[in-house]
Length: 302
Image (tube, rainbow, N blue to C red; front, side, top):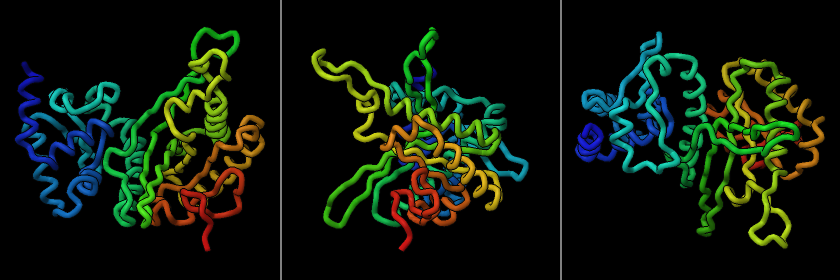
C-alpha cells in the first residue's frame, strides 16, 4: 500500500516536479543548481527551491548538505516507489542513503552530471536535442570470459550519453559517447589501462543468428555505431589537467589493441573547459591526432 500511496502523489506535483523525480532516479544525485538548469531554467531559482521543498515535504526526496551549504538531492525509498510506474524495468535504481549522498559518491556523480548538463546547454543553444535524461550512469558491458578464468570480465563505463543533432535540412544525426570521468584519484598509467579495455569491447563478437554467417560485433546489438570514448578530467588546475591528458594519450598510442581498433575514437578534455566553453569548442585532443585541438565531433578550429 505504501507504493500505491506514493504513486498517487506524483500527479499532484506537476510536470516540473515529476521531471525532477525522474532525473533524480536516473542520475542519483543532483544539486539544486543542476536541477534548476535541467528542469526550470526559465523560472527563478527560488521557484525551483519551492518545488524541491514540496518533494521533501511529500517524503519523496531528501537533501544532503555540503560544507558550503549546497543542497544535494536524492530520492527516498518512497520517491523510488512513486516513480516506478514511469521508469523502465532495466533502469530502476535503489534509493541512495544520506550517508552515500554525503560520501565518496558525491563528487564523482555530480561531475558526471555536469558533463551531461554541458551537452544539455549546447543542445538548447543550437536547436538540437539532449534532454535531462540523455545520459545513463554506470553502463555495463561484457568482455567475455578470459582464457583460464571462470568469471566474465566486465567493462563499466561511467556513463553513456546520446545527443541528437538537427540540421537545417531536417536531417537528423544521433551521436553516442561513452563518458569516462577522471578525477585523478589514480595514476595515469592505471587510467590508460582502463581505457584500453574499449578495444576488446569493440572486437568482441557473438554468433550470428544464422550459423552459416560470420560472427557479429557484440556492440552492434546495442548501438547503431560504436560510441566514441570521451574522457573528462576533473578537479585539476589547467596545466596539470593538460599534462595528465598528454601522458595518457602517449600511453594509449603505444597500445597494440587500440592500434588494431581504428574505429575506436578516444578524446580527452577537462571538465572546466567543457563547462565554460561547451562541447563545440576545440577543447578536445584525440588519440590519433593529439596535437590538433578539436571539438567533440572531431572538427578542428578554423
